[in-house]
Image (tube, rainbow, N blue to C red; front, side, top):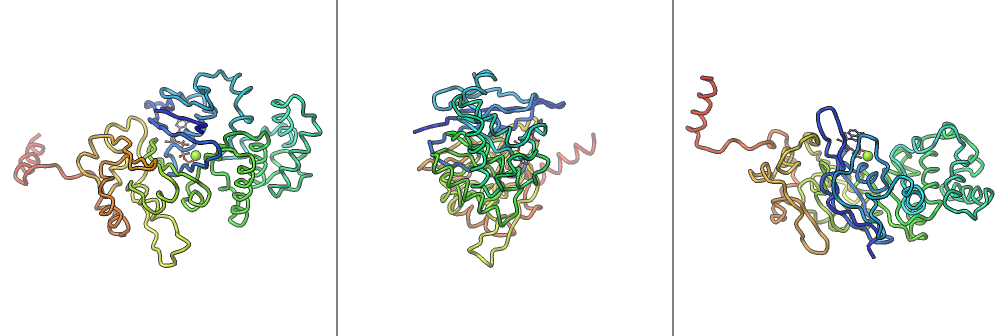
Length: 361
Ligand code: ATP
Ligand code: MG
């Protein structure tokens, strides 16, 4: 059963030089209990999409178009009061990217957990709420007695785990986990991910798991949405994204992450950097970095095309998958000098005349 249905969402930030189109026409639906990963480079719009769902956007952000339907309720139309009362923490919770910012420095972590629980559960006593907080701390590997500490007394990793405790305390139907293990060292990362998954399964919560790390999403997610330049450029089940992606950006991302089953793998990075999101214009936003871009890619924004079993791709060349996959695995394909806007079309003579005209000017 569909829990969340995002349709044509556009969330823009007001900046001095115009609107930053951080989420630009995103559509995604999530089933109850399902885990969907959002992957993509820094600045691609992952956090903006998640914050739009729980409406925790900064003041200069605006949802300019689209809808977010959560369990039959249109989130974009709720007042802040309604969001606080009906949705946040109890139905949708968020583990923010920078966990320390999620806590108020003035109160102890325990006081904040108790406050959130009691705000939504009139019949739970302070002692019961505190006990639930202590149990969650224990599950997440934090000494329960630290519940009386202030946030600044926590290390980054402990704050992250305490935030996970808070996010799960009210058994929400949807957890937005924004890089939930980035602040943790590698040894503990796996354990925390496992704990989150276990708790999620127990609660039958759905989850959006945001990460840069392809291996994390491939292990924890049912489906993966690949985000680039504010758009969902590819969406499919995790297995398809890992083994049979159709978007050149996904192919590039896959090259850049180590595959533990392949000792000889050579990591290949994608040259260039993500696009400017103020007035990005028409055309595929990945074209300037794409080794397979053709004239159409620079001129026409690709729309999502379906490739069966919920596999959606925004790429003009997604049909030529076998050729693209083979080429994308080669290091020379991703050499910077081979990528970029195509030469102007025309005969050499015509181009020479154009060049002369420019010189005469
Ligand atoms: P990261 O992996 O670094 O967390 P992200 O994918 O979460 O990146 P977002 O934080 O959603 O990306 O940012 C998307 C775009 O919106 C970026 O271009 C960013 O610079 C811009 N942006 C984010 N917050 C603001 C803001 N408050 N005002 C203006 N622009 C913003
Ligand atoms: Mg982010």
